[in-house]
Length: 260
Image (cartoon, rainbow, N blue to C red; front, side, top):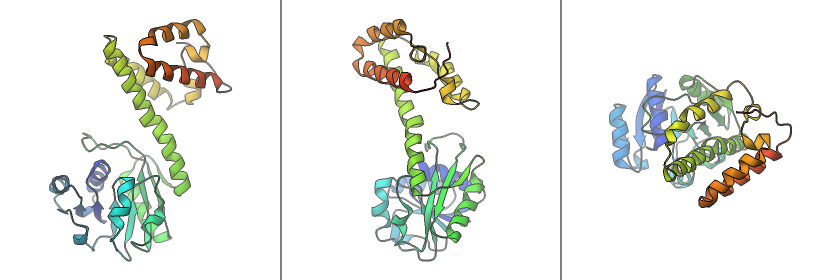
């Protein structure tokens, strides 16, 4: 397919690389950051612009890969009648694009994407479209770059997925950051925890996270919990989170505990 990418950040960069690797032709990249857009254009042997008025109108698909809050400004004066146009945001309804074209939709990659990634990660794609032409076009594009999961998902389903994604990715990573800072302050090496992190993540490929739960909270080990809380007196933020998560673990019904 001939594709124009609007945006030059993390999502635009990774999707563009996957499109390129799949044999698609990226006609143009448009980004407000001229240097970033130019760098990606050089990488993909194409052209760039930081003006939407200069958009190439010969593409089959236009992917708007910008932040949620930037979408209204980006599309304010964008008119691409007859073209398939999709944004990549989970929490923005597809109807935001209805004044841009009569073939609008969503192309949402459910993955944490960073421009500096050394490899091309597996990316589940959730797509939606206002009509069959849009849906089939975006579905075909998704299958060309995803080896894991391609699913049609409406606005409500994508928003719910996004909540779950924030919990398992952003919130979990924040806990890693807090643990790293705790280790630093206590003279410990955070890297010693990496095998545990990897094993926990790997275990839920084969079992429910509920069944994989271990630790003093699930065992109702009051003595160990109290020792931990005493040690966390000098780390009030971490102590509050420890208490909150301990209570949450103990309140979930039908746990099958595991002991470490």
